[in-house]
Image (cartoon, rainbow, N blue to C red; front, side):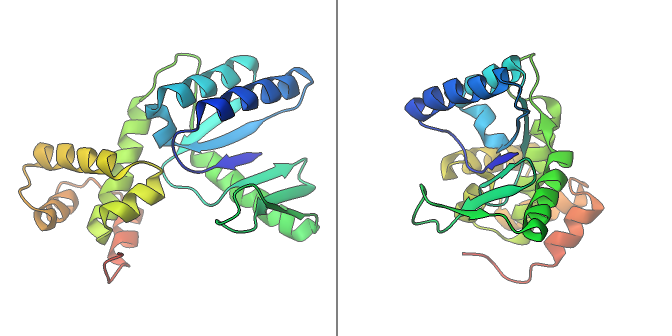
Length: 203
């Protein structure tokens, strides 16, 4: 089980990872990988994801995600030691902690949207999931920088999504957009409660 937050990946990394992971799948290793929806908008990363699915791997995407996580056979887990050391990981073998991390992955996996062999980059479920996440963050007062970081995309992409949503709802300001999002019912009950719980802007 692997959770990979963030957006696009470098081409050289994708090439080496593809060979390694297909070898594992051919050996009978079951792979479940979680990415963020943002990778569907990056063609090389999307093609990598499709090839993994074609080889027999399972891939799903979610709007927001926790930090990087790898769990093998539910007996050993690897987590980052620090954001400053991307190539360094902490190995965990304590059964209670590994079980806890596995459950976190399973919960995220259950709400993920599967990558399929149809090679549809943005199925309706992904588009609506992204829009709902963006709407929730806008209502909560998150800045574009914070939204971009949480959704694994660039600030420019966030600005484009926000602009399209504003035009569709007829908004002329950020404050009005937040009101219209709530008034038009774009948020589910749980989303509204989460947004209402934020009492300050995140910078």
